[in-house]
Length: 513
Length: 42
Image (cartoon, rainbow over all chains, first blue to last red):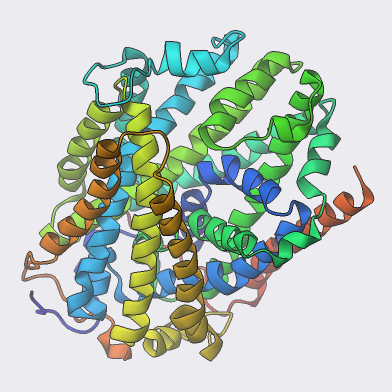
C-alpha cells in the first residue's frame, strides 16, 4: 500500500474522481438510491403484517435510532475520507480495507440480479398496454414470460427476457460511462421527480377505485398488541435498514462526490425522511389497489395481500384486468418500478465502478467497460435462462441477510471499536452540519444499532437453519446462497491484498483526527 | 375506514411527511453551509 500524498485531498484527485454539481443533485441521487423496488413492494406488506397502523411507532423509532444514525455514519465516512468504499476504509484504518471490498462484492452480486427484475418491470410496462398476461397472470409470468423450468440450473435462454435485460444493461452502462454529474446526477434529476409524479398519479387513481378505503382500513387499523412482540420491532429495524441503502457502500461512495462544505447532517435528514415518505405513499397506493382487488373478487383484503414479485407481477396484473382504465394503472405502476429500479441499480453499480477506478486509476469509461461488461454478461447468462427466477430468489435471500446485514454490523464495529474513528467523524460532520452530532450518535452507532441489527441477523440465521429456504434442493442453496455469500468474503480478502497505485493517497482525512 | 385507522393514517402522514417538510426547511433556511455549485463534470 502506498501513502504517497499529503493529508488533504489533492485537487487532481477530486477532479479525477468527479463530483455532483450541487447539494440538490446529491440529495436526489441519494433518494434515487434509497427509493427502490422494496419501498413499493415490501414496505406495505411488512407494515400490514406487523401491526398495521401501529407499525408506524416501531418504524419511527427504528428510523430515528438506527436508520438516520447509520445514514449519517455512511455520509461521514465518504465525505471525510473522500473515496470509494475500499479507499475510504483504507484511509480510515489500513487493515479495514477488506470491509470496503466486501461491500463492493455485495453490490456486484446485487447489480447482477437486480437488473433482471428491472428488465421484468420494463417488459411489464409494455405488457400493460394490452394486458398480455390474459386471465392468468401467474401462469403467464412463470410459463409464457419466464418459461421457468424444473428446479436446477439451465443454460436455455429466454428471448423475452434476454432483450429487455440487455437494454437495461446498455442504459445503465451508458449512464455510468457519462460520469457522476452527467450520468448519475442527471439521471436522478430527471427520474426522481418523474417517479414522484408517476407514482402520485397512481395513488390518486387508486384512491378513487371502489374498495380503496377497505384496503386502507386494513393497512392502518392498529393492532396495539403488536408493540409487545419482538418480531414486530425486528421487522421495523430490518425494513428501515434495507430500505435506506445503508451499510453497503452506496452512501459512502455518493457522499465522497459532495463538496466539502456541504451540510451533510441536514442532507441526511432530507434523504431519510424522503425515503420513508415515499414508503408511506407506496403503502397508501398499494393497499388502495389491493382493497379494490378484494372487493372485485368478493374476498377479504388479507386473502389478496402479498409482497415482492407476487405483488408486482401477479397481483397487479390481476388488478389491471379488473380496474377501469387498467392499462393506465399498469403503465403508472410498472413505470414507477422501472424508474425506482433504474436509479437504485445505477447507485449499486457505482459502488463497484468507483472502487475499481480508485484502486487501478482507471478512467471512467474504462472502469465501466472493465466492470460493467462482465457484470452484464454474467447477468444475462444466469438470469435470462429458464432457471433465472430460482437463482435470483436464492441469491437475493442470502445476500441480503448474510451479506448486507452481516457486513453492516461488521463495518460499524470496525469503525467504532477497531478504528475508533467516531470522535473524528463527529468533529468532521459538525464542521458544516446544521444538526450537531454528539455522544448520543456515537452510542447509537457503536452499541444500539449493532445490537439491534445483530438481533435481526441472528433471527434470520436461526430461521434458515431451522427450515432451509424455499423448496430448493440443498445443492442450489449451498451454491447460490451460502456459496455466493462466502465467495464475496473471499473476493474481499483477495482484493484488499492488491497494492494501491503510488499516486493514491491513503492519508486523506487524517488531518482532522 | 374505521376511526382508529384514520387516526393512525393521519398520524403517520404527519410524522413522516411533516418530518420531511421540517428537514427541507432546516436544510434550506437554517443551514449555515452554502449550497455550493460545482461547475465541473469530470
